[in-house]
Amino acid sequence: MKVGFLHSIIRKEEKLLLQEFRRRDGVELVKIDDRQQFFDLQRNDFELDVIVERCVNHSRAVHAMKIFSDHGVPTINAPEVAEICGSKFLTTQALIKAGVATPRCFLAFTPESALEAMDQLGYPCVIKPTTGSWGRLISKVNDRDAAEAILEHKQILGSYHHSIFYIQEYMEKKGKDIRSFVVGDQCIAAIYRHSDHWITNTARGGSTSNCPVNKELHEISVRAANACGGGVVAIDVFETDQGYSINEVNYTMEFRNSIEVTGVNIPGKIVDYVLEVARK
Ligand SMILES: Nc1ncnc2c1ncn2[C@@H]1O[C@H](COP(=O)(O)OP(=O)(O)O)[C@@H](O)[C@H]1O
Ligand SMILES: [Mg+2]
Image 1 (cartoon, rainbow, N blue to C red):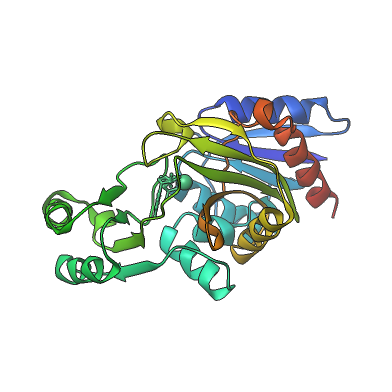
Image 2 (image 1 turned 180 degrees about the horizontal axis):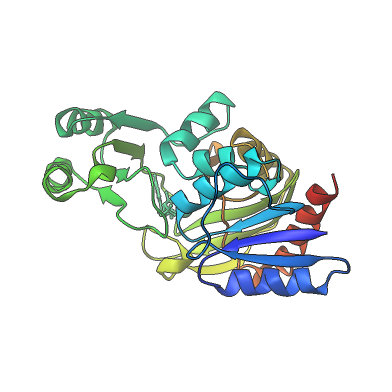
């Protein structure tokens, strides 16, 4: 079996996945570096059974997976999943369409209408670029003065990515939220991410502890994953008095801080799933 491993820099996650693939019998790994690879769009000579996508860069991931997938090579994840999960707007749309609980969200196209939207949603609220990760450039807006300042900065200094205003209700989360991991139709593990800061990403210093996967968490995690097309995804979940609420779905998931704390061999589960898809 030939497994294409699409990557850029090899981080801890990629190392763990590569190790896991190398442990399996009958697997030939073909490493594809997105910094060196180019594609002849008219030719289909990949001879691969499956592609595992581990790019750092979202557009490279989406483009490359579209090419592989159009040539009949299954990719994990599918290009459509990457496209949806790569955009907080498309993710929110997918969740709403599937009836999965998600924070209230407004979208606006001008600073003026964005200010009106924030006034209506109430303060504090959160404004985010629709594309991005690791908690970068997301802002908690505590009052109207802050809203005006942020919007002016976005208008004058922001790039194209800041011309769509994605505004979310602020979720009171008592110092922690949940990151759950879905592989196929199973929620295989979850962690709490604790932080004194309102942004809990572990990339921003949040600490972790095991979060037992109860029936409700399992169900909403799998539903959120499927709403975005399914596969191997990591889900940001808020715990509220009304139940769980899904913040976003991530498609090239990071899991280095979650193996020990959950006791689950996350890369092992991913590799099992990839090989299962390849066999089909
Ligand atoms: N609406 C919100 N209410 C409360 N906390 C939020 C909200 N949105 C984001 N956060 C916090 O910020 C973190 C990063 O936001 P997120 O939307 O997941 O963006 P990123 O793609 O950068 O991870 C979340 O994990 C959460 O801790
Ligand atoms: Mg997140």
